[in-house]
Image (tube, rainbow, N blue to C red; front, side, top):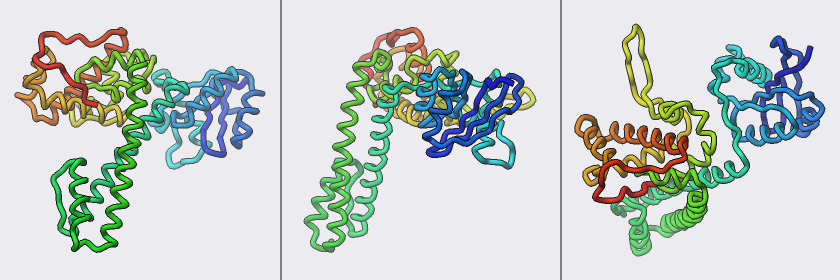
Length: 348
């Protein structure tokens, strides 16, 4: 029997290989240490290799493709239904990859280039630092409040708070020192965020897809750069604008039965960071809905008249995602219908 398909469960040190023939019968089960993987696939005849999409899988996909194999990535949620119930180990996962990859309805994840992953690393680092910045700010406010020192909301107000901490004689030296250390860490995080954002903006200006996306009201250079780096030239993998919005988790859950449609909250599936930035951008546009007099602005005000603000924000984010799909698919820029009194500003 000829080996035709391999399911490769990727790990840090030990990899699990599950190979099947043209009749889907298992003919190979083997563990490989990390240093053995390249040698093993160099000696193997050309075949199709299925990997579960994760951080390291794109690296291995590029490497195995260079060795002449056809590599396809499968989303983890698409592999899970084919794993044996009650069993969770590397061998089971590798076998499930072979089964999932043979199903005609499976949608494969495009392999990212090194350049894409480099830009996405900038976004990941920025997102982490923004979270740490929020945590540090909350910690400073919380500790200062224990000594009766409070200022209004806003990161810029923390300087005022630190002045009070320094001047207040009732704050013990140990408490003052703790707050000074946290504030220094907050300032360092802010400086690094600015540095990363500058590099992201450079990418947004140089990338053609990001420049097109930035013409959409509510989408700024950071959001445009993230979408361009994540999707890139693989927008054709989404058959429709609704498919793209569904991938971002911006469509309602369905609990339909007996021919009766029942829709719930959005699924929140797919890329969390893109969805978050789109919602933030939509929030900024909702706030200026009264001065947004294009066709999209009129539609937005109509939805606001019938629905709560939060629901309207998510609906606008869904609309923005669909517009993004259209622009990337047609290689076009956004052209507002109607006239607007003020230019729509970039949100993120």
